[in-house]
Length: 380
Image (cartoon, rainbow, N blue to C red; front, side):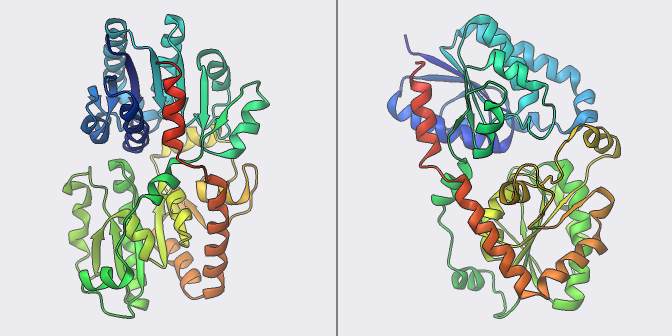
């Protein structure tokens, strides 16, 4: 009888990271049955998905409360599927709210748990360390500083490298000249990137402020704006663009934004880390509902929130290589002011570029997906 593997990747990024591993694993074990939660990429590999990761895009304390009935149903259905299928191992990817609950369930059943992309307990909810120590058999982390953090708590985490490096190494982007010609961009035009996020809530909160800043920038620099549109979001998330027909906005992939922009306005999250890997100067912005922010500010221990600053300057540092604008400060005039300081000062932009590229080396590891697939094979 073919072996079975349970996977839970509750976000678009998690689906991408999990798919890289499962693709490697299926090469060695083509008869393996994979089931659980994932997105387009896992489905394309033949995984049997009980729920799609697009249904799981629930952010913040308030959103979780609103969808508590749905989340309870998902957990119930997952548990029933696990009892029915009896997987040899559980592969949990990021998404800690649900994955830690499922880890406890697997631990009680005696099914090994491999957790990839650790909950960021070094930033908040450090109490989760107890559950991690109790319920997780192998903790695979993507930042080197996490190894020392978990060791202080008696957990032998394994640094496997960050999957973003692997994905970027496989990228095939056009040259600048080809990109300019393809999009009929006038030679010499400055290119400024807009990366408002991959979740509907992020785009709703932050794209309007980015566009207000873009209008100010347009009056002074007359640039072309490159908008990284999340492919899984529908057009309604970007309806506000119709109010900014005075701007030259070109839609392209997020990676093209990072490759060709001299500055990006980017929502805090994985995109800041990806931008770091390109060495592109950035302004990190973040805004959420006030109740979510007030609760979060009581729990988060870090002085910086962006991964670009944390990786570059260190976990406990208050120093920053890139500006961070949160909540009320994430407004059009302030974003414009910060952008102008960078655009008008090549030395500042150059220093930012060099520091970010140096920090990229901290994320490096040869083929995390292949390494993790090898670990999973030990349990199959």
